[in-house]
Structure formats: C-alpha cells, structure tokens
Image (spheres, rainbow, N blue to C red):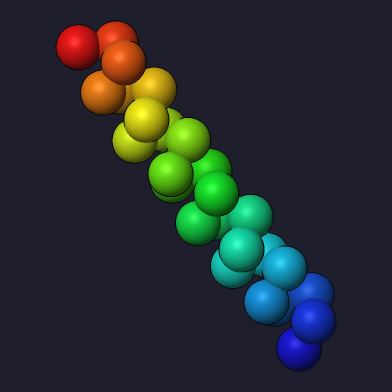
Length: 26
C-alpha cells in the first residue's frame, strides 16, 4: 500500500514538473 501511494505521489510530481517545464518552455 505505502509503495503504491509513494509511486502515485512520484508520478503526480513528475507530471506537475513536466507541466511547469512545458509552460516555461513556451
């Protein structure tokens, strides 16, 4: 359970970072 939650949190962080990077790139 904890591993899955951590994995989901990491995915969300990665998506957020990519989203921010894309906004800064444009």
